[in-house]
Amino acid sequence: MEMADRMGRLGTESAFSVLAKANALEARGREIIHLEIGEPDFDTPEHIVEAGCKALRDGHTHYTPSAGIPDLREAIAEDVSASRGVDVDPEQVVVTPGGKPIMFFVILALVEAGDEVLLPNPAFPIYESMIRFAGGRPVFVPLRQENDFRFDLDEFRAGLSDRTKLVILNSPANPTGGVLTQDDIAGLADILRERPEVPILSDEIYSRLTYGDEFASIASEPGLGPDERTMILDGFSKTYAMTGWRLGYGVMPKAFATEVAKLQTNSNSCASAVAQQAGLAAITGPQDSVGRMLAEFRVRRDQILAGLNALPGVECATPKGAFYAFPRITDTGYSSQSLADTLLEEAGVACLSGTGFGEHGEGHLRFSYANSRENISLALERMGDVLSRTTPQ
Image (cartoon, rainbow, N blue to C red):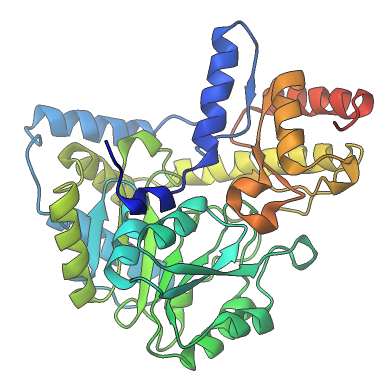
């Protein structure tokens, strides 16, 4: 079949490509330590699982409204109101099968051929993929290790133009683990108030996974709330270890939510009725599992941080959120992709090249520390062995 031209502009997510390679090696008998895939290694909490099972038994097996069941939309609105300090109406909430549809729908609804979208780099690759798919042009603001992978505000301002149709923010960030401080958010807000016509997509999927200062959202800034021009992306996958349930949501101005729900009607109809009932139990039920998971991630973060910084030629900044480390590896003599390939083939350690997250990811690798302490320790040992005995090709 002859593909439409736009299919040539569609990117991918390297984590799944590397996972497939790692799985193929495992099928041939290799022992692989998976530090490539970005999902919690914890089970979904039992009360959430039981809510899903009960939903099946109670007959929640039919279509729901495209924007989500009313009880869940109301619970999300209350939760976001409390956590961001803004007033949110349930009609501003659209529940989706995972967080990616919010990226997809927002970009499709706003970006046309020739429009520019300002976004960080390195960053989650689906942003760039969807911008190009819609015919837009990504304009990158570099994130550098020397600045804890936060924006240089002068560079951010310089990236805006008359053609800017959307700004994308992500904090805590994938792949860097960087977190925008309250001062960063205030500075960005001052810049964005100069451009009141430009909407903002704020990817806050890791908002509950921070290790230092409290999470700060651009949606909390006066004039930039979700009732005005910020679209918040959040969900259940990372916070509640529910990646396979496929449940996310967006919070946005009411009129825009109507358009996003229309896109959902035209694509996947609605999120799973069972997953939505489980999500309702997650957001309204006990939150102690979130605290326990975060505490364990903190221990693992400190472990992998110390281990990476002890490796020859590797320098890692302290991740402030999410569950990723993004060390600089330029002094090893390897390029990012060549070292990622070498570690998989020689050490049995699966990780991602920083270039999978954009041009400014060169010189870095991404490690997910959503794995056991034992496996992290073994991975570090294997990596140290490879770096001490191999020469870059």
